[in-house]
Length: 360
Image 1 (spheres, one colour):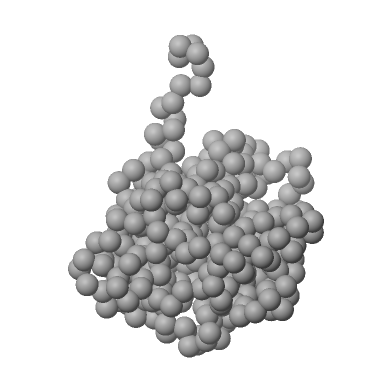
Image 2 (cartoon, helix red, strand yellow; image 1 turned 30 degrees about the vertical axis):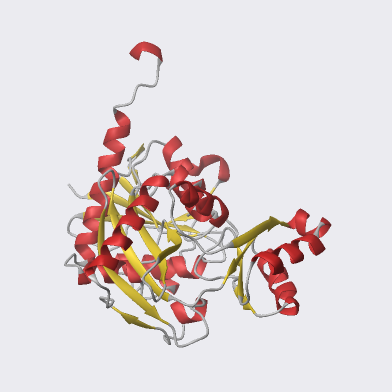
């Protein structure tokens, strides 16, 4: 009997299109002889739409935008497949949702309440990994080196703009990177070189989030590493991002193909070990599971500075996470198999927990 796998994608997020690219790529790597794949599409306005089982790989992003009966909010469990008159339990969910309302622990919480196995990080790791401020605070607890930064919410900016500007200009050195705290894929991020540009960039970032983080720019190599596992995570080889633009923005990542990559990156054995140590420390301090991509800045003297981790890295054809594993000897289809196995392993462990006093 085939394993019933739910592909959950789309989402009410500025990264909706990235999710569609990821879903298409994953569908092209799944073993359809082993899995019965059910598409579950979330529109940009948050409507859940279930589709018929996929018969094979999806060729176009447009074909993923299914438009069947919308699942009513009060019957969210109706995204489960139906066999006759009985609801048939999905064996595992593969969330492919990037950004808020999907990668941030919200959907993970729903799946936990429904007691459904799912691929990737849990509620805590997803939420902490999405919020760049919380993530950096936890990294600080783990003793990981980071670039200087300042953060604030919309109300603080409204009431204390002058003080915040003085704090940023006094504590940080130009150029600065202004980012929404809860978003990925470089959406809403601006590189600025003066106060005028900073003011504009803050307004852009506030379009996407109520919290903003402003980071000091750094002259360094941009290196990435993929992490895979649950309690005993392991790391891939390192890869290097070689953007031809001023910085690695959304278009460079997903649209214009202008970014080059060095896979594997030219790193010394000592530097590789330092990166692996930092990646696993970051993975563990966030209590991650399944998969994480760790992003680093590495200075000329080989100081390893963690930038961030991505708890649901993309699976697009140009995504670093699967590329790094492929170059490490783990094929794309085998990577998906292992991620599903890790999801089931974590689920089975949770089923052993007691949920009543004294085991009653």
